[in-house]
Image (cartoon, rainbow, N blue to C red; front, side):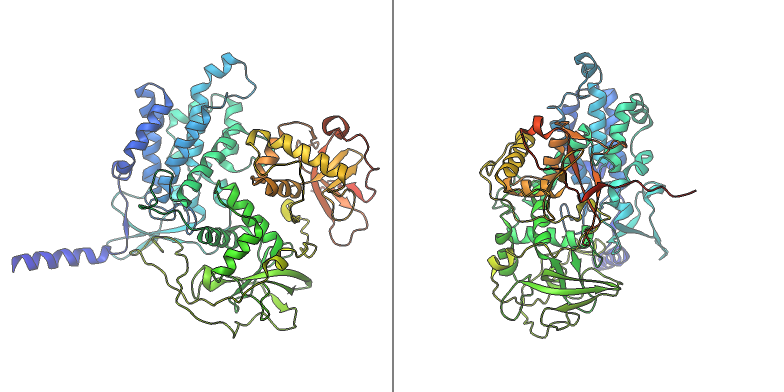
Length: 590
């Protein structure tokens, strides 16, 4: 009887805490990472006293700040504690990658030797803190008090009190990449003052470090940013593919169709412009179908997967096969995946070739991205696309779990959903659709669409990273000489201008990267290091040109190769394109 009373009292005490996480000490949070912390210690090679104050103190502060926050809702490290795990993995990988760099780049050997430990610390801190803006931008964290009060936790105010009970949900209105600009705001709670003073002792390094932590390094090469990007990709790929050191029997790699679906959901939810001119996705709140500009969405989906370091990513037709096979696409009655639709948003109207994905399949019944923009979508047969399809059938296939701790505020729930079965689709026909329908967006550099990869013999299917820039130049030169790369016409990615040879960026890098299975941003970065492109007066790599007499788009953006005859061996080029004029910078009157 006494045992029963004791058990009853325990159950009653636990009931208010059910479904909540508890703020723990750094010692408790880091206990499972002792082997990894030992490896990090060995990679730093500094005296114990300095390591404890500069590195160990930093790691403990980070742990108590992020607690069991996940790294993402439905992508990598999507579980309680995922952000801490990802941060430590990225930091360790960054230390290993840093060993192959002589920093500062271009410095004399004496300087590189003298600054070695400082640059190592800069790389480590930037890697460890690169994602700590996520609790600010992506998540809503609530502290639940014993008296029933619930307060929102503000990370800028410092860590949660140890022992606090808290829950985590993801903000539906979050915007992609905002978290990348916020880590500097949390430096005061993570990096010890001695570390901050040390970083401030070299202003050139401090500038690179701040760029890496604020997401502002876009055009110019930055060794610290490059190292962090590689380390981040390693951690992401390692998590999404089940880990290199884990046997298949213990933890199988994530199937291809699930990886495609998870990344597609992230791109729709966080990155792609939605319901606006130049966007990739269009949908109404009353319909289960989300329309994606077909060619552009598949190109960017594939590029994103490859850019994360994921392996085994097939060409676009195979990706379409996967989406069809696992019922993610809403095909037409005659079995076609790609369909012509007309989109009206206010005074703007455009006909586009799109594929329709099912929101209920990607997010679960009743879920998906929200919109408050008035959009009218009409199919090519004149039927409205704003009402749910009446031809959908039902099966019991579960959707991909968005994460293993779905709301992070209750026990783990495996989500089941009602989905619609897609009909058979002619994949080859949908892939051959031209990309002329994509509406240009003069406000964004990435508005240019990517055509099908060029048929070229100059580039092999596998190009070493160090040869990317050289291979790109060879591909560009041969493409222009043979006519496979058109020049000076409306669809061309190459134009002659008085300043040199204009290559439309990032479009041309995407096309090349797709043909060799590389990340287009890496190709662009390697190309910039050749220093054969001309910079603007403001020191930027990207030039903007107005298109004279073009009614479809007002501008084109790209890089200028100053001396194509010398640097690319292009002996004869046509006269400058008379339709392109350098855009004049406009100033507002004060």
